[in-house]
Length: 59
Image (cartoon, rainbow, N blue to C red; front, side, top):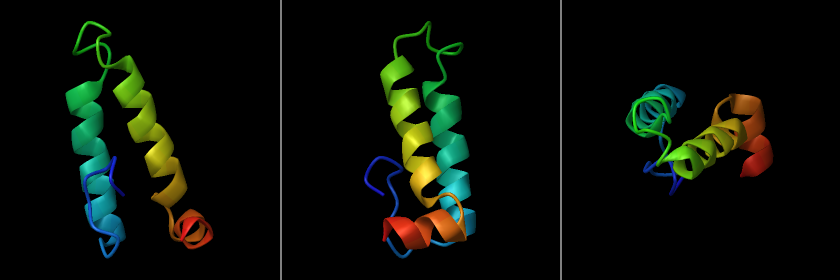
C-alpha cells in the first residue's frame, strides 16, 4: 500500500488508478531507465493487491 501511495481501505478502482498513474510516472521508456527499480516495485505491489483474491491473501 505504501508503494502505491494508497490507504489500506482503498477500493479496487482506486488501487488500479494509483497503479496506472505510477506506471506512467516511473516507466523506464519515459524516464531513460532511471526509475526501473521503482517501476518494478510498483508492478510487484500491484501484483499483491491488484485483485480481490490476491488482496485477501496479502491482507
